[in-house]
Image: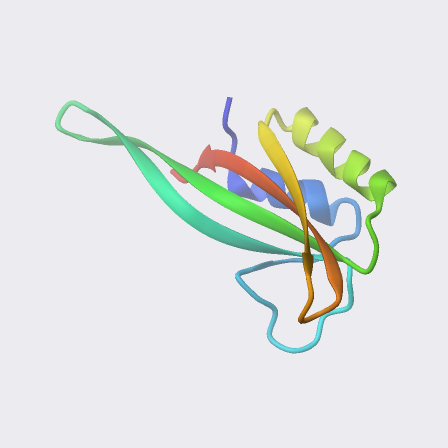
Amino acid sequence: MAMLLSEAVAAFTSNGVPVAHVRFHGDQAPPYVEAYLNETNHHFADDRNSRTFANYDLVLHATDRDLELEGLVEDALDAAEITWRKSGGYRADADLVTTTYQIEVYER
């Protein structure tokens, strides 16, 4: 069951990781998360939009891969009943390891 974006953000911030929508204004020391809205899906009933789901990428940036932190975040996402998929990468321009959590949450 999808929950709210605020609950997904809390999964990171409760573990000490700051979160920003798209980018931080100014320098931010890792680890940190940037949230990107990919798309929304609308469900209609009674001739109106009854529920909106939003697909987000929550990108965790770190100097090295931190399996302990990832585990804490994943436990918090699970506790909030937010389903997620994970992929990894590297951001050469900033010399940072990235872990991307793809989630779907209620927008409203």
